[in-house]
Amino acid sequence: MTNTHSPTGARAHARAQAAAATPTTPDAPPGIDPATILVAQRIPPGGYANIVLGRGTRIRLADPTGTTCAHLFLLRAESPWERLNVADTVKVPWQAYLTTGHPLLSDQGRVLATVLTDTSTHHDTLCGPTTEARHQLHLAAAKQGLEPRDIGPSITLFRGARVAPDGAITSTGNAHPGATIDLLVHLPLTLLVANAPHPLDDRPTGDLDLLAWPAPADRAGNDDPEYRRAVENTEAAWTAALNTEVPA
Image 1 (cartoon, rainbow, N blue to C red):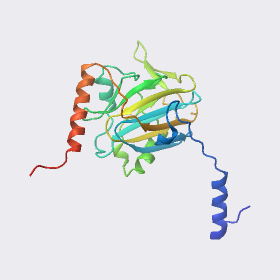
Image 2: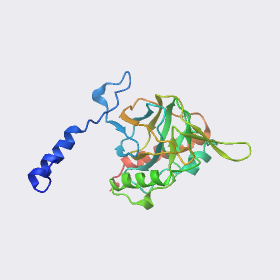
Image 3: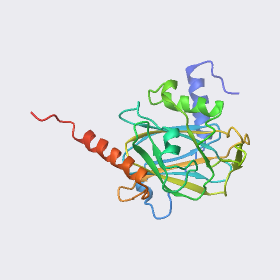
Image 4: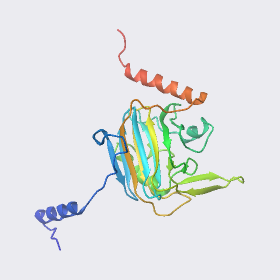
């Protein structure tokens, strides 16, 4: 048994624990140079992540075993009072079920990110996080200097929910192992994500993979007029943010 009563013993104990840990990271997606990967994290059940990402970043969240559940919240990095608005994310595109082309809108009517590809389609904008997931999101937020009051309702990825004809909300569970959803970032973001069960599906979760890489040439979206207006609002805000000098 390691003696931790002295600094020397405590140091040996800590180093032994570190040596025993074998963190794993997800592989780079096919066709993506591993050297360009900005973020590659495998988030275990009960874990969370907090990262800041620039405009033009592509984010991939993946469900390697068909059992994960990702509670996602976004804030504008340089202006964290602007944040994901789930109600508008559902209302503006006239669609409660996330999939390819769906914008994730802020409370200022701007597009924080757009769903670029989606091989899962098992997502939820209706139920919000569990108590466990909200606690994890608060911990993730604290690492970015944010407080619980800064975190609003989140969306859930990989464990879906649907509204039945009688109005009841029912769980649709996970899709197949290896399902992914890719987001394209429109404005610099603080991304918070927690790996915890769904309110309607309390099965233990599996690992959640998170990757991000620069993709300035990627294009996302759809031809809906509501989407185009939101993009115009976003581009105007981005242009204004770049032009901060006041003419003499």
